[in-house]
Image (cartoon, rainbow, N blue to C red):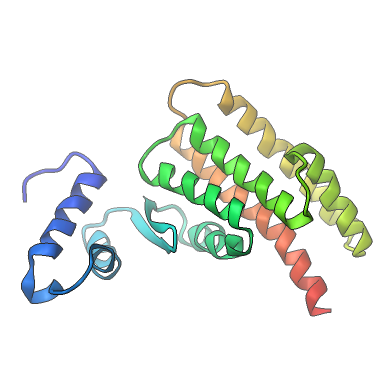
Length: 202
């Protein structure tokens, strides 16, 4: 195989190979080839990307720490299925990230996904800054330990401050900074849902 210049080109070539190989991939769709064949090949080639499968599509993203990718990216797709607007926006951010669009729009869509999640969770249309307080009021009514709110609010503040700094840039954003925001979005969503699950179990 000739050299390739990008992960997208490599994936296109493997997909084309799958579609033209009667022996291994006859009667298979492009998506099934990608899901069945490509993950193993990426691993064999030591290419640090992974595939996330969702009804909105397959997302091929740079691989970070395995435990964080599974807990805060893959599972975020599952957690957000009950919150359709936030799920849709999170998928847009994931697609941008998977396409290597390390730009302020990607960071903004992660922030927007978190904001929409809190709006759908609380049943309001308030902004992120206001809903961080509303979540703490909700937790207070549920007798959640005050320490949880004491942790949640500074995390939201730091998350918002980073997003505000990113929003001032017209050029590309550092990939690791976007990876951090991607993981942090998952952390904040999980904090809210885990409290809800705890209360439901009681």
